[in-house]
Length: 97
Image (cartoon, rainbow, N blue to C red; front, top):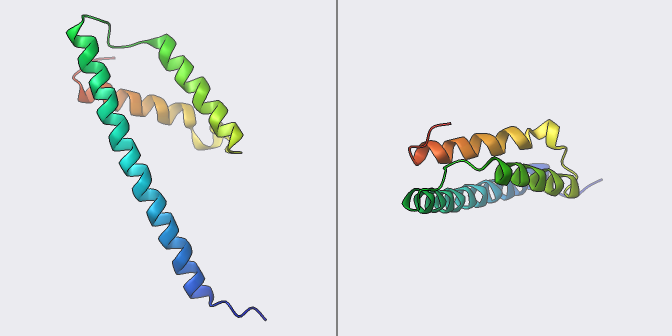
């Protein structure tokens, strides 16, 4: 018989999930700060806000990272999530699609 208390084990796993969620939020906040800086730099120098080539490279890179991590990019909507985040960042900078 297993001597590990399943409730305690479950609580420990949930605590780990909470820690991961907090790290993700902090990383997203930092990413949005960086994308805001990119938008400001582009605006200051008259560069176009969107860069389809760069976005396509990012999506490709994220799909590769997902595959390496054994995460199906289609199941988790990696492409759509990235594009959604990019639109949110652009919207926060006052850009239009």
